[in-house]
Structures are given as structure tokens and as C-alpha cells.
Amino acid sequence: MLCGNPFQVPELTDYCLDFLHESKPDLKTCTAVCRGWLPTARFHLFSALNFSGPLGNRDLRISHLVGISGSPHILALVSRLTIDVYYLEESNSFSAAIPQLKQLEEIYISGDLRPSTSTLHTALVAARAILGLPTVQNVELYSSFQSPDAFLYIWNGCAESIRHLTLGTKTPTYDWASSPVLDMRRKIPLESLSLMYPHSVTSWLATTACPFDFSRLTTLSVQEHVIILGWPQFAGVHLTLQRLEFWAASRTPLDLGLFARLQHLRILLVQGGPSLEMALTALSTLPGGNRLASLEIGYLSPLPGSLGRLDDLLFSMALPALAEVTVATNIASRHINVEKAMPKLLSRGLLSVIYR
Image (cartoon, rainbow, N blue to C red; front, side, top):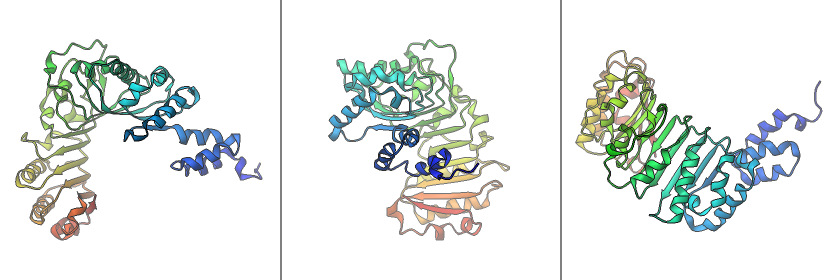
């Protein structure tokens, strides 16, 4: 039976409301139109919450956070939370409401934890509670910790559901090998790992204080931390890794032939001879019959001669699955004609250029 009023078809109204997912004023208006629009509008309003950025309007944000903390039906809609530790320190009501985040899958924590105050304890307890939620799958941590013990504390009891981890964490210099053993039945298998600056917690990955198993990684971004690929904890990635990103600035040689399933590769270079030579050396280790489908070269201030050498090498290699080579560079390099500098890849229809 056909419905005379299309607005009485839930699937149709949901489809229309989906187009407003980035317009909060319009979504708020939709919540007042009719009861049937309320669930979809609320979902788009509250599925992602952001309490980060400049602290100039922090009082308003704290008020907003306190209000949401008293609304379990709203907290139950949140799937992604971006929050500065400042708000974890200042909002006790939110800390108490963390168990109500029953659908939270992604968490992004940033900011500096202040040294030994009562609020520091509040922030650490809140961070630990969030990381322990059984639905959390993706964790991005960009915080500075005043002590290694504080960093270790938040991972004790973290969720077994975590599959993706990004670390841009800073702690004081510490002998991570002396860290206490984490009491857990088994390590948590990660699917992706991204290591950002700085390097202060990298060694933690190789200790019994780290709760994660890296043997099944399919995606890895190591920046300059190429050395970890030689650690026993990462031995399994030779058989599982499909996506790899690294900076061609490490003195550690990288043999791409070890990664039998590698399909997507991103290399970051800076202007200068050593970085280019490291990239060329790594690319030359790709064996014939490799599965590489896409290659992105992030090149800050490239020189035409350097691009030409990359063009010559890639054109001469056996890359049967390669569908695209992307050169991503900065806006200031627009004066360099990348297509002209890499005519061989261009002639095969493989080259694309992005200015960021």
C-alpha cells in the first residue's frame, strides 16, 4: 500500500536528514518539527562530541559537558569523543557519567596533564575509565604525561575491543624495560598502529607493560621509528601488513620485500639527498610480483631532479598491480611542474598530484 505523504516514510525522512549531518542549527530545528524526526536528528547532533581546541570559551564548554553528563539518553548516542584533558580534570560529573557512553567506539584525548594535583588524579581516573569501555575500538592519544607511572596507569584494564591505536605521547625519559608486568590474560591484538612524535614511549611497545599484540597488524605508520620492524614483537607483520607509512629519514634500512601482502605504501620525504636516497633504496627492495596497488610520496619542497629519479626507478620496476602514484607536496611548491618532472609515470596514466 502506497503512503500518500512521503514524510510518513521513516526511511525517506532519515535519508533526507542525513544530508544535514554537518548543520547543527538545522538539526536542532528538525528535533522540534515532529517526534518521528527526533531520533535521527539527535543521532547526528550527538554521535560525535568535541571538547578540545583553544580554551578561550572553556567555561561554556564545561557547562555544555555538565549538561550532557546528566543526560544518559544523549551519552548513549555518542560514538566518537574528542576531549582535552582539561575537561577531564574540571568536570567531575562527566567522569561519573563515563559508564553511560555505551556506544563509544572512537576516543581522541589531547592536552597536557598538570603535575601532582588533585585534579590530575581525576583526569587519569577518567582517561582510564574511557579506555576501559568495552565498546572502544579506536584510541588516539596526544597527551603529555608528567610521569611514566601516569602513562602506565591509564592502560591498566583497557578494553579488549581496542583495534586501532595512535600515539603522539610525551613522557619524561624512562627505562621502560623496568616497567611492572601488566596483569592480563592475553595481549590485545591490534589491526593498526600509528606512531607520531615524540619518541619517548616507543620502547614501551616492546615491554610486558604494553597490553597490545602487534603480530596481526594490517596498517602501520612508523614515521621515523623504522627500527621497531626489527623487534620480535613485530615479527608477525611481515605476513599481515597491507598498508605502511614511514619517513625516509631513518638510518635504519627498510626491506620492503619482507612484506608479502603490502598493497598501499606512503613515503614521506624532506628536501635533501639522504632522504631521497633512503626512499630510492627502500623502493628498490620491492620484489617482482609484488601486490603494491597504490604509492603516495609525500615530498616537502621537492626538486625536479629528485622527482626525475623517482620517475626513472618506478618506471623500470615490475609493479604489476600498481594503479596510482600520488605525489603530495606543499602549496609553496606549485611552481614545480611535477607532471613535467615525472613524464614516464604520466605516460602510463599512473601519476596524480596533490598540493596541500
